[in-house]
Amino acid sequence: MLARSAVRAALTNSRSFSSSAARQTKVAVLGAGGGIGQPLSLLLKTNPLVTSLSLYDIRGAPGVAADVSHVDTASEVNGYPADQLDQALEGVEVVVIPAGVPRKPGMTRDDLFNTNASIVRDLAAAVARVSPQAHVLIISNPVNSTVPIVASVLEKAGVFDPRRLFGVTTLDVVRARRFLAGVTNNHPKDTGVTVVGGHSGKTIVPLLSQTAYGKGLDQETWSKLVYRIQFGGDEVVKAKDGAGSATLSMAYAGAKFTDALLRGLKGEKGVVTPTFVKSDLFADQGIDFFSSNVELGPNGVEKIHPLGPISAEEQKLLDECLPDLKKNIEKGKNFVAN
Ligand code: NAD
Ligand code: LMR
Image (cartoon, rainbow, N blue to C red; front, side, top):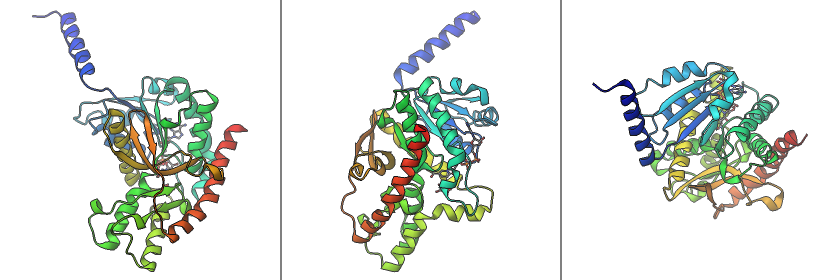
């Protein structure tokens, strides 16, 4: 019979062998105990590209981790309580942040700024300290401001790399695809839509004219569809009637974007999706963050695509988007500067 130490050594060797053969990716979820955090953690547990999950929250993360860890996929899961943020971030390659309060009926996303700005700022400071090489995915609202906040914190710490910071706008893309499928009676696999701008109301600009099924819509159908894509979040906030905002569809969208990033990091070619990043597209108008199609690769942002041809109506939507977006971005930057 093998001595216990020999068995341990054999296991260690086989583990280190497999770790050199396959890519190891540790992903952290900050805010893992929340409405988004829990289903997002579950979906990430089912992603074979994730080899280790680090779940952190000021409330309840160890319980969520114990629960999710029983799912029979290969990744390991660890939960960290409020006082173990740094431990949660050790060795992490991707950090997804859904921490913060959600809207109630009657609120705008900007109304969340006072609470969520400092939550996101403090989490970003921990990332800068412990895992400065990590790719950071921001879900916490208002995304148009929280992404510039994180950029400014990382910049102040001297570790900002614009290729590694992403505002997750995938829910707008998911909604656009689903709603266009609904109005044209098609399968969502055929109704993908590029959504550009930011993530709130009129800053959300769907480019329906670039799609086969979106370009032929009559004026009234187009207007209603655009409104629904821009204000889809309000539908959920209203229906939940004080119990929060989108959590399940957001977890799906967050897992989808994380998967796209992980595929890009692994070297898959042609992974292109809209995301809110530091961008030169409208820098001449003082807007240095913008969501457009971005190619994801081994370093994160590989290439920011231009908008491409847009219709006169879409140009009007863009003209309405830019001033609001500019204000939201400046508000985020000023919060860290002052
Ligand atoms: P929730 O209240 O259910 O969960 C938030 C979690 O964050 C809670 O578990 C809370 O304990 C935790 N938290 C608070 N402060 C923290 C801190 N300092 N460190 C770690 N965890 C902390 O809210 P939710 O429904 O999950 O929404 C979370 C955020 O996501 C909100 O700001 C919401 O507006 C936003 N959101 C964004 C999108 C998007 O498309 N980007 C979509 C939906 C919701
Ligand atoms: C959404 O679009 O559903 C989220 O941004 C949450 C919200 O406040 O609407």
